[in-house]
Length: 335
View 1 (tube, helix red, strand yellow):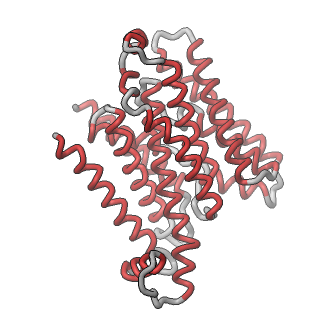
View 2 (cartoon, helix red, strand yellow):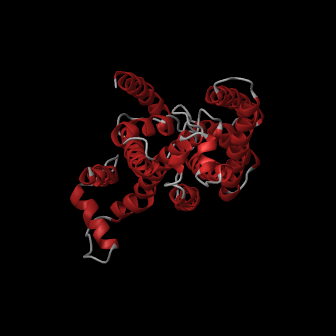
View 3 (cartoon, helix red, strand yellow):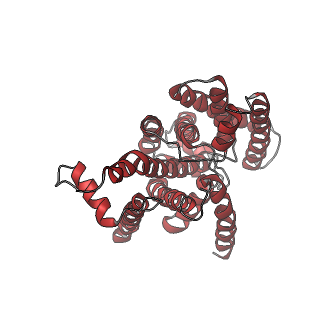
């Protein structure tokens, strides 16, 4: 049992490293595995790669930031899904179902509409996501339904729909030649325009959001108990929930602000990881992050190589995520 506890994360990490090398070399300007390794070694102080300058530009200025962004976004969305499902004690809880993505989208779209800086857009996305979660939690708690988790999900769907209307309103007011195309393509999700500034913002906000999840990983399992049992253990329940929700919201807001709305990762990946390692938060979190990073990177690499035009990752995650979720639900029923 102890041996299997590290074999799976190690295998996923190796798979992620192999996929990363493949993604760095694939595209309209192909680089062989040898070329990629030589360019990486050159930056680490090794021998000169002796390749055309274009190869260095493609690897370090175009594909490198994009690949890292896909890894960070996948890991962040998966971690956010794990945290929200623990807080709400509901496997259907996810950033997009609870309105976090929609709230972050409103903040980020408003920032694009008003011409704010990248950091201001990140802040607006975080504020929008946090406000959406607060509204869902407050209204869901007040709804007189016996099934509290069901009420939260229903309220989340309603809030997400309302915020979607706000995004549509901003789109109608946007400049049709400059702002509207930018907002539309951004909402479909894309890593095509990721730059170093976006990558740094994503990494910084992602680390800040991940920190409370890592610090609370052992206490988070207590959320599977009743509220009275949690308090009897001496755990400050509201503080624990708040820390996890703020961390999950910051993670989601960072991904939405950097790459647009990419659904299903935060819902499907924790389900798959739970089937592999069980419900323990401390084991579920790293495995989900590795699975999310691997899935997101594979989807983005597929999307930019499958045809002449690049397919938005948000579209592909929806096409792949729904059937995978059906399969996981049927598998869980059989179990």
